Every structure is written in C-alpha cells, then in structure tokens.
Length: 294
Length: 312
Image 1 (tube, rainbow over the protein chains, first blue to last red):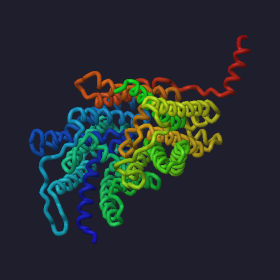
Image 2: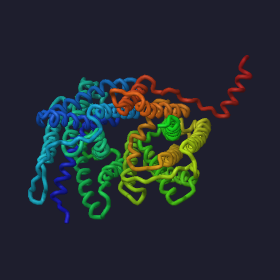
Image 3: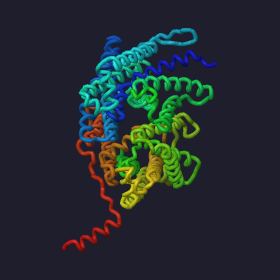
Image 4: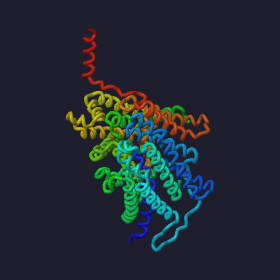
C-alpha cells in the first residue's frame, strides 16, 4: 500500500528544495543567455557557510541563512562582474561562457575543499521527527516548504507589483527593447545574479542540514536543477515552480515504484535526468509557453 | 616509488587522454558540437572492454567491441540530440553521462556495481617484470594514439574536413550548398564516440580496475580543459593540451612526495586549471595552437603551381 500522504509530503519537500535552488539558475540562464555550471558551487558555498555559522560558530539558523545568502550572493555578483560580463563583452559565445563557468566551478569547488576539506561534514543536531497521521515529518522539512512558499510569494509580488520586478521581466523578455525604454539593464542583471546565487546558497544550507556536506554537494543538485530549468522553460519563474514540484513528485513516486519492482533506488536521480532529456527532445521550450513566457 | 614507473604512468595517461582530447576536438573544434557527456562513451568503452575480457574474448576484439558499442551509443544519441541547440545538446549529453554512470552503479551484474571489477592488462606475458609490462602498456597506448592522430589529420585535411568546418561556421549555409548537415554531424559524433570508447578500453586495462566513480563528469571537463588550452580545431593542439594538463596534474602529485607545500597540491592544481581555462578564454580564446589550415592535396597542388608561375 502506498502511503500517499508521505509521498505527497516528501514531494513537497523535494520540490521546494529544487525550486529554491533553481530560481537563480533559470533566471541567469534566461537573462545572460548561458547555462551557469558554477551555480552548483553557489549552492555548495551556502551549505558550507551555513555549517560554519550554525555548527562551528554556533550562532543559530537565522544568522546561518543570512550569511549563506550574502556569501553566495556576493560570490555570484563577483563571478558575473569578474568573469562572465568581461567575456561576453569580448564576444564570447554561449558555449564559451558555459566552459568558463566550468572553470569557475572547478576553482570554487577546490577553494572550498581547501578551506573545509573533502571529508563529509554533518550537522550535529538531528531534527526531531513526529507523525501527523500516517505522515512522518521533521521540523527541517517544514521549514523548507515554508521557505519555498515565502519565496514564491515574495517573488510573485516583486515581479508583478514592483518597478524592479517589471524591469526584470522586461529585460528577460527583450533586452534591447528594455534598454530602449530606459531600464537600467546593468542593475537588473546584477540584481538577478545576486538573488540567484543568494537563493542557491539558501538551498545549499537546507540541503546541508538534510544530509552530509562536501564540496560536491552542489553537483548533486545541479542536474535536477537543470531538469527543472528546462522543464519549466529557461528563464521562467513560474515555470520553475511548476517544474520543481512536478519533478519532486516524479522522483518520490518513482522511488516507491522502483522499490516495489525491486529495482535499485540508485535510479532515483536518473528520473530527473530522463525527464530532462525527454523535455529537450519533445518540448524544448518547456512549460513556459503556458505561462506566457515569464 | 620507482621514478621510471611514475614516468610511464604519466606518459600513458597523456596517451589515453590524448585520444580522448582528439575525439572531443573532432566534435567541437572542427564540427562545433558541444558534448558535455564525453565520459559516457569513455565509460561504455571501458565497461565493454572489462566485460568482454572477463569472458576471455581476445583483447583486440575487446577494444574493437568497446569502440563499436560507444559508436552505436553515439549514433543513438545523435538521432534525437543533434537537432538541439548547442547548449541543450551540452546539457542533454551531461545528463546522459550521469544516467549511464547510475546504470553501471546500480546494476551489479554488469561489472560489480559500486564495487567495480578488475580488468586484465592487454599487454602481458608470463614472467614479465613490472617495467616491461609498463613499457608494453605504453607501446599499445601510443600505437593507438598514433593511429588516431594520423587518421584525424587525414580526415580534417581533406574535403571532409572542409565540410565539417563549414557546418561549424554556418549550418544553414552548408545545408544550402547541399551538404546534409545531420548526416555529417552524426558521422562525426559516432567517430568521436568510437575514439572515446577506444580510450576507455585502454584506460580500463591500464588501471586494471574500473568502478563507477572513475567516470564522473570531471573526466569530460578534463578533456574540455585540454582542448581549450591546446586550441580547438588543431589536432596537435589537442595533444599539446593533453600533455600540458596531464603532466601538470600527475607531475604535481608526484612532486608532492618530494616537496612539501602549505596548500594541498590536489586542490591547488584544480584551482590553477580552472583559472587557466578562464584566462585562456578571456585573453587567447583560440588556445595555444591556432586553428590549422585545411591542407588538402588540391590545395598543395594549387599552391605549388602558383609558386612556380607566380614569380612574374
């Protein structure tokens, strides 16, 4: 018998984590027009900073989130300003930028490996779990879902009601027209890169709290994040929300089926990858078209 | 450890990754295809070799089998994937690499799953010393490398080479001139995959052991680093890149035994490599060796004729 309540709850957790991790990736991909492979390292950095603040310094989670957010966000902006913007100005193609992001990711990963070492770290505290009916729940999981909801709400408000939000939408839709309308593209771009990396950092903090932390943590989430990006439509915020939860659900229900069929649950990660490939082949634009391209 | 064995180890890795770099160079440098899943074909070649060797199949066929299986995978992938925009192709191939790695990790019956499987060396005979075996190993690898290099030089310095460069520069124009771009792209992709499969087989028999975590995406990115540094679209550049990167990585690891540094050299080398890639893309995107001209026989004759009559 399938515990649907548990499956749905787990899907919500996985989907929430994927959503927070992917918003940045899809935004910068859509805006700067290249897949940033170093996004994985923005996630990892958040995990390590979160660990540093909450476990090594013992300052508490709000500080941890703040530091992870700021740290990753700043690294994101520096990466854009220091590497991607100059390269783009020199006429680098999308692929050159992607390769540069691979180089950047390599550097960041090994800098973190140098600082924190390659042995996996884990949080000392274990979250208490309690049962709501047939569903097993932990406090951390509830926080993740809450964070995603808050994020979705805040971003929706920002994108539709604020000047900056509308500028972001305009720029990702048509940069030349946006520039002609007097929008400060530079500011929009920097904000997007900061926000994207900052949110990646927060996702990293959550993932680190859930499992072990090592310099490869971000990579574990990168391909699912690409799956969410592609399925939702590159650059589409609302598409990312839908795609994150769809993939979260697919993974969790898939795991149940795999276990029932006696197939190794190693294949859990492959579920997102297969969705990614199928989307690329059959509907490369993703779901975004249904959302009017935003 | 024996310095000579270190030396053999380094040059063998240069050889194996040289072949891998050549294969990527053919796909990206000459034809403009972005394959971020090179490791998938490397893996297929390695695992095919291991499985076939376990059944006692003669080793030449193990190599061929690995290359053919990798080429078959390349064909299967190229059918849906080569129509994709370049970045989508990159992401799709990246995902493919990971899917294959998960498959061999999960399915223990293929080759030991997570625990991996031992692989016999291709060149060995009873009573051979370690040095002799290493020499035989290196000879085999360099034989394959030489074949690949000569073949690719021939291929790229021919009308075929011109077509694939044309496809790289402007697909639509090439198609308008009657060149079936999907056919050429698929051929190149299959060829590149076959070479990667061959390299995989050589890798497996050199290390005498394979396991899934030897085939992480990092392997693909090593190959990319090599061709970016050495220069895409230049066969010698690909080899130069392989030489530089492998010597740097392995050389510094060996030096670690003799010199003590405050920073773990393992981390430092990758930080420097990442930085090198960024710097090359920023300041010398054509790499160390610039794109080679297409030297077809026709061009040779034309140049000779021009020279003999052109002094007037």
